[in-house]
Structure formats: C-alpha cells, structure tokens
Length: 179
Image (tube, rainbow, N blue to C red):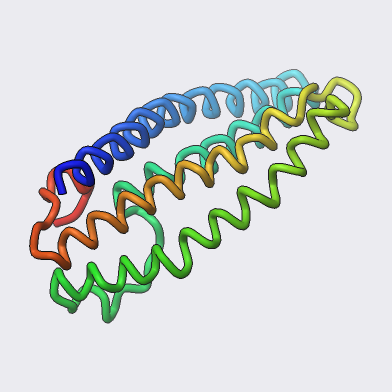
C-alpha cells in the first residue's frame, strides 16, 4: 500500500509542477493577445505569427494542463447523483470510469496521435501561411504528451479510489480540491 501511495504522490507532484508551469503560460497568452489587439486596432496591422502563437499557446495550455485539472477535480462532471453517494460509492464510480473510459480513451488518443506527430516531424511541417510559425510538430506533440499526463493522473485517481474502497483512503489534502 505504501508503494501505491508513493506512486500516486509522484504522479500528483508531476502534474502539480506542470500545472504551475501552465499557469504562467497563461500570462504569456494575455501578453500575446494584448500585443495583437494593439497592433490591429492602433497600428492597423497584424502578423500571422502572432495570431498562430495565440492558438498554439491556447492549445498548449489546455492539452498540457488537463492532467492538472483532473488532479484538482476541475473537469466538468454532471454529479447530480455522484455528489449524493458515499465516499466509497464515489470511489467505485471513479474506479470504473478510470478503468473503462479514461485509460482506454487516453491510450487510443496517444497511440493514434503518435503517427500524426511523427509525420509532422518527418516533413518539418510548418505553417502554410507566409510568416507563420515553423515546426508545427511541436504543438502537435502536445496531444500525446497532454493525454499521457491525463493517463498518469487517471492511474493515480484509480489507485486512490482503490485505496478508498479498501478502507485505506488517501489523505484529502493530497488528493486535490476534494472537500
């Protein structure tokens, strides 16, 4: 049990660190959008690079930050029934969800996106627009990377649920935003 707890703590620490890094990236998005708006409305000009950078950073934030969001229980969930369940019943719902939906879904996306990223890297794909961002494979690589972080956090969530089912719950302060 101690090995499982340490493994969960390691996964949580990785996604916490990634989440803090991604949070700082949002400040960069604000700055890029601000510059783009000022250039467009004040100077009547715009750059393809800046516009593409906006959506590249946006994609990075949401793909790479998804594992952190799962750690903090921040994903959208319709929990009309879930919130009324006991802690052990919630753990069962989480464990079944992780085993039958989260893990297979993440693995499917990771496996299918790797070919997509490899092809982009092989041709050194860049923006089709003049002045756009080169090396589009970098942002495409965020797809399997982000889903790998979600997969890891899902494994942690599954183990925590299993510990709860076995009457050795994980401490709430480590689990994230659980109340």
